[in-house]
Length: 331
Image (cartoon, rainbow, N blue to C red; front, side):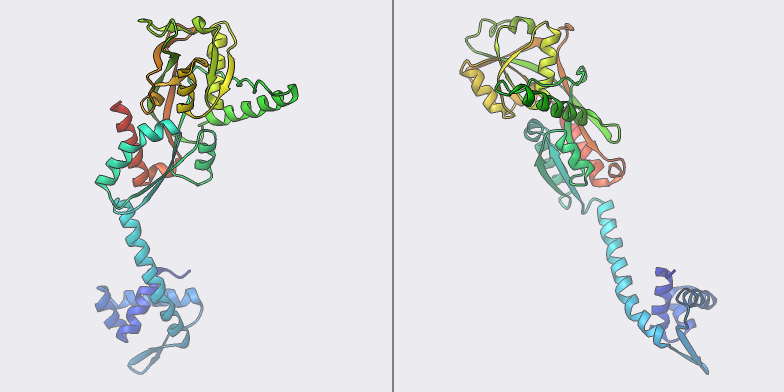
C-alpha cells in the first residue's frame, strides 16, 4: 500500500538528488529516508531509484510516481485544510428540514445566531412534515430535521375524507396509520428535545365559550363542526375527542394554519392548534382558549430536533442543535 509519508520522502529525494539531502530537508535521519524508500519500492514492487557511483537518479517508475505524487499530496493538503476549517467552524454546511410552525418561530433566531458567530457555515432550509422529514434525514437529504409527536397519542388514525367511499376510507386509514407510525419512530436517531408546545382551542369570537376565564373541556365542544390540520394532527384530534366521549365531525381539513384560522373566524367550525402556530398568525375574529383533555390536564405536542448518530459529532450540526435548544428555551 502506498502511504502519503512515503510519497513525501520520494518527492524530497527527487528534488534534492540524494537520501542525505532529503533527510536534511525533511528533518529526519538518512537511514529513516532509506527505510521509507525501501518500503515504498516494496509496495510498488519495482525500483524507484537507480544508484550510479556516488550519485542516484529516479527510475522510469520513480519519475511516473513523482509526477502523480505531486497532485496526490496537493489534494491531501487541500483536504486537510478543508477538514480543519469544518472542525474549526470556519466552513461547513447544515441542511435543515422543518415543519412550518417551527420554520417561522424556532429556526429564524437559531440560524441568525449561528451565522453571526460563524459566517462561514452555510445553513439551508426546506419545509416538510413528519414522516417525510424523517425520510429525508435518513436518506441523506439533510443533517437536522425538526419534528413533533404527541406523547399521549396511541397512534390513532385520522378520519377519512367525508366524501370518500368505504373502500377509499379503508385505504386512506391504512396509509395514515403507516404514516403515523413512521412519524414517531425515532429509535435510530439522536433526539434533542426542544419544548412542549401546548394545544389551544380556536373559537369564533362570538362563540359562547370564547370569553371563558377557565380552560374549556373538549367535551363542551362535542356538538361543534371541526377544522383539522395535518394527518398526524388530525389523528391526535380524533383521539382527544374520543377520550372525551365523542367523535368529532371534521368538515374541513387543511395543513395551512392561516386557512384554519380564517375558517374559524368565518364561523365555519372550531379547531385545536399548537400555540407555536398562533405566534405567526392572528385574526381579530378568533379567540384562543386553553383546552383541557379528558385526563384533566393540558394537551401538548413534543417538538424535537433529530439527527443521525454520526452527524451529531459534526461541529456545525452540534452547534445548530445547541442554537435550536437555546431558541426553544427562550420561548
